[in-house]
Image (tube, rainbow, N blue to C red; front, top):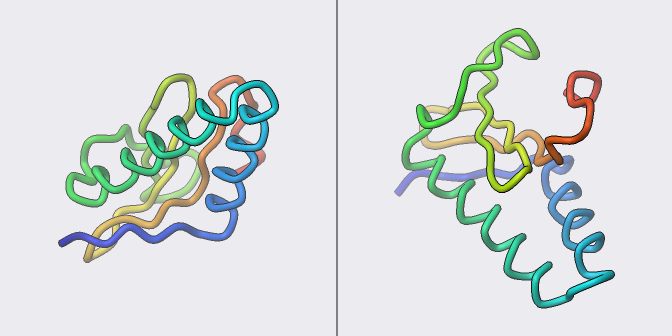
Length: 95
């Protein structure tokens, strides 16, 4: 089984996304964060699904999920999740 490793920034991003959504809907927050995490684990099995974003960082790839962007690096045994950000943000300085 492929490995999905979350960098501390990505884990903090998921927590912040959950907290933001939970202010209006705790159930939706839980289900959406679970959806984002599930997408990350799918990327571990198929790291080529995302779009190359080498301009931001060599080897970096991006995969969209409902208005959010998962940034990750393929590894020998899966993926390393770098950040999970809203597509509305200026992501360049965050990467």
